[in-house]
Length: 199
Image (cartoon, rainbow, N blue to C red):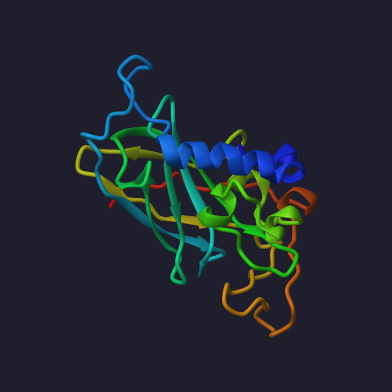
């Protein structure tokens, strides 16, 4: 879960994420262990106020097992993996989308978050997006993955936020140095995101 507690303890989140990536947090039962036999392709595009959102981490959380993780590119595109294996098991998922920014405005992706040796940029990193998108405990975003997989596009409506910096520049749309802005500390307008539907 990405929350206020997460923001105070990024190292703990990194350990949890590393365990999820390494072990997969997958399986049918605890006795059976991981099951990667039915992974299907899951892709999509993440936009913020209708603009591509690069550097965001996308998490698909099921009722049990098979957590899917992905990271958006410059076009806001992502693809999910389970324990470093492409794809995700069919089923119903809760979705969270997080854009964690360092003090210099650089997105902290899966690599920085999952490293057991915390990079300095993670120590002061803050969540840019509102909690109702970034926190699995409060997110209303969902997805139903069918047996053939699917494409799930999410547009995050947050007009109170300026456009985040591009990963390669560290500046905002005006060319000014961008500081990380925590979604938890910012005014949050009521969200009414429609759940993504597979194409």
